[in-house]
Amino acid sequence: MNIKKSVLLLAALASVPVLAQTAGKRVIKIESSPAPGSNLRDGPWNFTGGVAATVSSLKIKSDKGVMTAPAGTPILQAEGKRLADFTGNVTVSRGRLSAKGEKLAYSEVTGQGVLTGNASATFVPEKKDDGDPVNIRAQQMSLDVDTNVSTSTGGVQLVQGNQTGKADKLIFDEDKELAQMTGKPTLTRAAKGNRKELVISGDEVRAITKTKVLYVKGKVKLVQGTQTTTGNAVYYDDKKDVAYVVGDAVSVDSKSKVTLRAPASGYLEQRTDLGRVSVKNSKYTIPVEQFKLSQEK
Image (tube, rainbow, N blue to C red; front, side):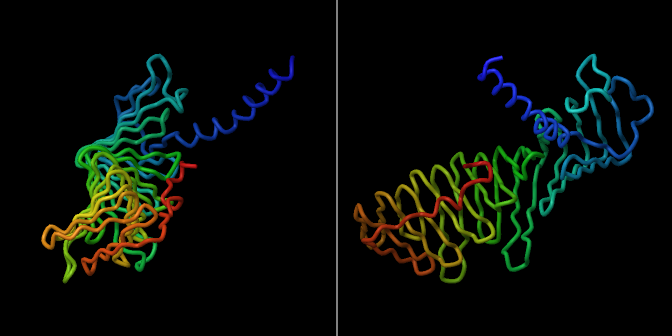
């Protein structure tokens, strides 16, 4: 055997324990016994009268459940290849995340549980001082058992305190308390006291929900009262009421007719509590590293 083939064989053997561990993590366990009439050898197995199941760190409850195996494979021998469907008052919990819907379809092959039918989820802060709970609604919500990540699609809405985000797709990283919104995303901060409503939009929105800081990139627009500010990217700190707009940054006040432009080497600073924009000549670097999802390098 030549050296190249030896290296490839060793690499393949090294990956076997990792693959086996991943497959084992995806195997679902339903606590109750199959209902009478179920085909105990080949399936399907039917579960009624309140169902409880676990897979990795996910805990599932529903009114009914059905487990199936690939055709021609006994269900006990099909571990890692089975499907489990849960219907009726479905609830799913993992750590500080709780979700619910009308149906959950889980695949041991992919390790994905897809929640549909008025799908919603709530992520609570670790401490009371860490801010408001994050509430998510979508047409579909997929929970990954290999990572603490959920992906919501279709009419997505994220609400946290006085902030409301809307998008076609939302990836929520529970470990980093980080939301990534794509597909015409917008974030609206409701008016309060002297602070006017603020609407931020762009090609992509990333928000750290614990600290309420925001990074938006691509055709960025901030609208507050009569002011409209545009640029290539923005970093917004809700607690400090300040936004830093970079890259061809321009702000126009439709009432006063005043236009402010940042120099090529500078940026615009917008105080969202005062409704005031100022030109800065120095460079501002957005801390993009802190907005990376766990799976991103």
